[in-house]
Structure formats: C-alpha cells, structure tokens
Image 1: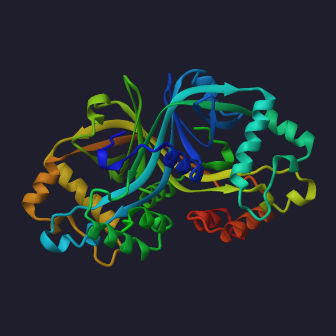
Image 2 (image 1 turned 120 degrees about the vertical axis):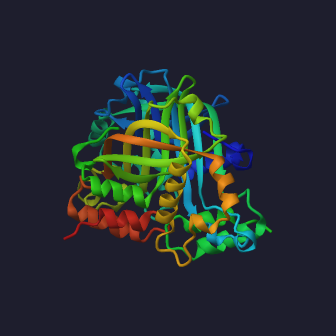
Length: 209
Length: 209
C-alpha cells in the first residue's frame, strides 16, 4: 500500500480499535488460479505476545482447498471513507490551486493463514466473536441460547481460520496534509452531507484546536 | 469468493450502480513480494462492448514497478455492511434455532491492469471522475477551475490505470435466506440502530411486500 508519511498510523491500539469497530475483513490471498478474496468478520486475539485475527468460514467455502495452510494472506479492514470536494477548501478562493481527493481509513494486517478444525477452538471463537458483536445490545444473543444439538450441527458446518499477524499497517487519509482552516471547512461541509460516512469522517478531519 | 446462489447478484446494471455509489476500490494484485493492495476511487467506462474501470495514482505509488502492465488485478467495491444479531429473528422465539450473521454488499471486478501515461487520457479521466463525484453538489468543482500551470504540474504527478474487466461478480448478502417475517424484523431492528450503515442495510433487507 502506498503510504505517505502524513497518512501513516503506527499506534497498534488505534489500529486494533478500528478493527473492532469495523470487523468485516476483506481477506485476500493467492491461489494457482489467481487472487482469492472473501469477506468475513474477524476478531483480535493477543496471545503469547503475538497478534492473531480469528474467523470462521462455511464448510462449502473452498478457501482451504485453494490456499494451503501456512500461506500468506492480507486482511483489510475499512473504516469511514468519503469524497472531499475541492470546493470545500477556503484556500480555493485564494489561488484556485486545490484538487479534490478521497479520504479513508484502512488497516492492513498481513500474516500467515492457519485452518482450525478443533471443536473447542471453533466454539471458543464463536463465543468470543459473538460476545464482541453483541456487546452493548439491549438483548444480547449468546451462543448458549441455541439448542445443543442445533449448535453441534452448526459447528460441523464451519471451519476456523487464524491469521498470525506479522505486519500491521494503518493508513488514516483524513486531510492531515491540509491547513487547519481547510480541515475545519471540510469537516463543516461533511456535516451538511446526508451520506452515511460523512459524520464519522468529519470527526476524523476536524482539528482538536 | 464464496458465493452461495441465494446471495448471487448477476445484473450488470445493479453492480455498476453499486460501484458508482461506492467508488473507492480496494485494488488487489500480486507481486514478487506478495499481495499488493491499494485504495483508490475508480470510474466505469464502457467502450467497444467492453467494461473498464479507470483510476489514477500518485507517481510515488510503486504499483507500476511491482505489478507489471498486463497483470491480473481484482478491484473490490464494498457497499453497506452490518452485523445481524440472532436476537432480531422472531423465529428465535419458536425453537431458538438461529445464529447471527454479517450482511454486506460487494462487487468483485477482475481484469487486466494497464498503465496510462498519455496526458490526454489522464485529463479525460480526471474530468470524468470529478464530474461523476461532484454530481448533485450545490457548488460542483470542475478540473477547469484550477489554474492551467497548476493543473499541468498535477498531471505530471500522477499516472493512469485502467482495469479491463473480464469477470464481474456481485454478492448481496442481505438476509435473502430468511423468511419474510425475519426480514421485516431485521429491517425494523436495523432502523433503531445508530450505526452509519444500518439504514441502507435495512432498505436492502426489507421485502417489497
């Protein structure tokens, strides 16, 4: 990923928070037939000083056949993203020397793929993922809400996956390369937009002072 | 991508509309050093009965060095995505045989990468991309708003890229495998959520009848 210094995020806690908030990974790997990409929620596990991202797939998903255990994969997590019109910049009125851009937040977690078939691993993973996703809900659903025989069949229908993360990159492209006056004007402009990600992007762009 | 029949979207116009609405692509390719992924807005071009996705990159982006012209690449576009709690399903109350899931909309455009250095191609592309992005804005910015010498320098600082699309896949995972009562309840539940993508996902899940 092209990563100019202004947009580089290196704080692991900030990147892991973004993963927790936007857990749907685009998991990309490479097979003999070319690039393979799947979409699945992942959950962070920190164990023995290492970082893992855990997930599960339907048994019918052929990832396990085309990308062998131990292969490299890249999990991409995307946060807020929004077009930034050049007409928002007050500096446009000075000399017109502005261009539009696209702001976005992404985390790239590169690592080694390993498949998991152990029932206890799968159940532990489903509990951790579900508890994380249900956190803060008025009526949280728990894996133990499902009847035992139904759950046993569900567990047979999936396989687990862990990505041992060897490299974590964050790119926060949120107007850091603009002057404060432009940042405030971009945030103001975004706050008037009806698009889904505009408020979150406005908060990311707005300077603290 | 694992694509069960229930979630398959095959209508090209629906997929191209989704690309226009969510133009920030995750462009994935493969280099000698492994998977390469970049994020950039792309615009659809239909020419001579073929489909192209066009974009531009900063000259400092080394994609052109690590992924040679003519190589396969995959552009992934992501629409609304939202966790679906199993506690939303009325069928939970009958026998408890429900599990949560993650809904999402994605388009995978696979094709052949070609780089573009011609100034007229780059200018034409910037005009098309900008006009598309600025459409409907109160004060649309146009490329011609920028001073000519400034624009000339900007054009030197980028290179173009076209992806000749050979395969277009759509996955709309929006609760089609649930009964209508569950779909309505999921849509109702999403409409009470404060998250950014909940309203769009509610519209996708809600049955027409």
